[in-house]
Image 1 (cartoon, rainbow, N blue to C red):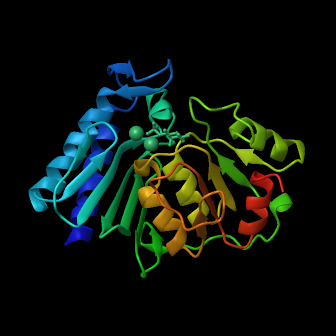
Image 2 (image 1 turned 30 degrees about the horizontal axis):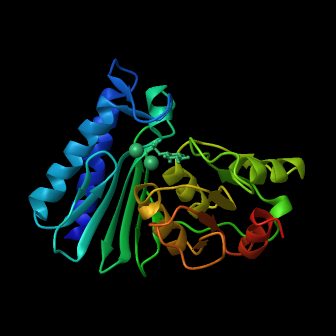
Length: 256
Ligand code: IPD
Ligand code: CA
Ligand code: CA
């Protein structure tokens, strides 16, 4: 039942994204000039909430635009109504709905759907990860220098010591391809699908990674913080990889 609600909610948000895509819509700034929120983010969130609250009116919801709807339930829905809003606002089809479901503090299910390229990723803890219902797995690469990586940049903290720009430049100077797609949820799913060998980012929120990190783990990958500890979506740092390059990637990030 949770699974069918999760799929319905993800599809409802994605339908709204499709309705607004490349049309005229209102865009506002959150903080800074390019931290955007659009009418479509709010409309997608509303459509997602309707589905969840219809099936599970008492569950906890944490969502990027609406914030927290706390409750005593042991189930928490963690919602990013559009991940990749800047792409979405520019008509770039690298954006998606991302919803993770946590039970008693453990992520048990996640769904990420990009309707523009028709990719629906789903994972349930212990049952593997799928792309459009086909099982996926991470890549086999064993060396960082031969890897294709992806990262993202926050709007602030860019220049802190060993921060996003320093780490990025270290890798680029050594000739390692590091892409920047603008959607952390897509980045994670593309690690899970074996397209990227690893992903790292300095400052994510729980809604960016809740679904995607489980999808990577269930595809056979590894996800930690920058010190190699078990990943929690409630702290900012993430390193997700195929597992085989993980320790070496941590060394590159920490400049060891
Ligand atoms: C953003 C994207 C981006 C990441 C940012 C996030 P949003 O989410 O995931 O890739 O670099 O940190 O805020 O704002 O498009 O939902
Ligand atoms: Ca996001
Ligand atoms: Ca968002």
